[in-house]
Length: 248
Image (cartoon, rainbow, N blue to C red; front, side):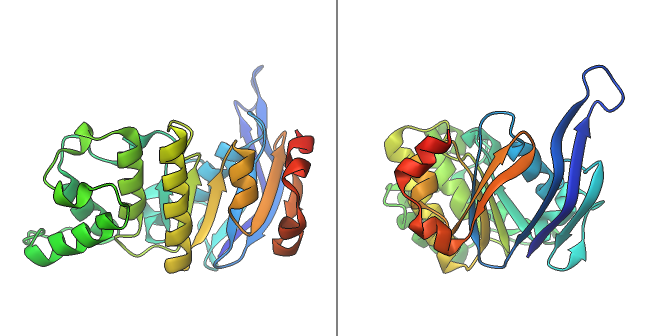
């Protein structure tokens, strides 16, 4: 589903403050894999995500998604394959719109917009049923302004919105970093459920080693722009939580 071929990313090339964020990264992620990426600050995790999403263009190398070379393809054009949940809960929603209007926008993410009635009773029921699975009691508040909700509530809704339209790849960019432990737990449980239910190819960046141990079927550790460790399903299953702590 995702293939990174010899990816190099250099910022401020030729200047005094030149930085090599990614150094010859090659990774192949199969359809349906749930990859957890860990690493210290500055290891290249976020740059890797931005390269896959199209927010950054590699200095060298190729990005292949679903057997198509998308290296030069703009971020918005990659939305036919990719949905992304950001670290900041405010980034994934329109705060001034209602919950139902946010969901309607999400449902049209990859389609051409037309002047038709967007929110009808059937759509409202679909959204209510999806939101009810969170157990947050928000299914009866779909007319409420999104900006009035807590960070945890917004992040949970953002996750549901990510699968309102067809998507193959879910990028989770430290989605629990700004949340309290209880909300964080809800978010990751919801993400894990959606990944399995929709058979998504998923990548999660996290600093939480407990979450890295608990979730995903593959573990990648990055350091100084390189892949330091890449554990497949069998090796990750054999991993002990203490091993992760010792890596750091």
